[in-house]
Length: 204
Image (cartoon, rainbow, N blue to C red; front, side, top):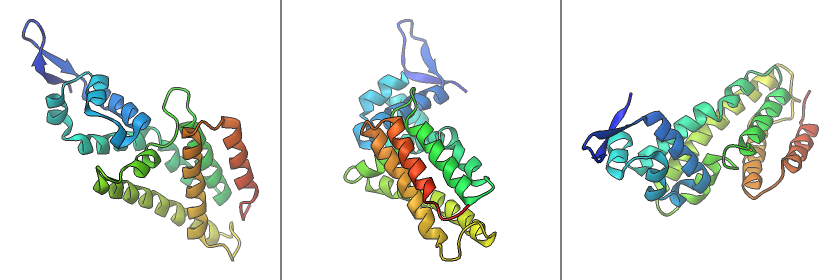
């Protein structure tokens, strides 16, 4: 569905825009600069719309960011659901880490993870948004914990392993990969980190 711009062209006809394309453009700006670093001027320019049209279609900046997060999770983090269906705990970890590498080190998209980038920055301007991001990450981590608990019940993990602690280690490594990617680390360097973590994985 297309929306009409609030401003008009020279002939007085409203300019239409595609909300899906506009949201995808907003995602790229948020991903590159984080929530607080993305200005309204940068967002509206990238989206090809005016500020009134942004408010009319998406709500305020925080609402726009939440919609961008939804898009990010649907398109960029789709590998998570597939990874959780892997046949073993180690295979789950491998697919999650490889998916993170592909996402954080892509040639077309900004480096790093949108959630990590924004969670670190959202402290003064939008503390409630930071809490929202933390809640999303907690939900994702809970799904990993549940999968590793099943792996332990199936004998795939040693008895002495705490699935929750192991899941926290795994997600911490994934977040660390995002930070390193944003800092300019090479794909080979981060692949070595993934290989080392998998080499010490406590199970088959």
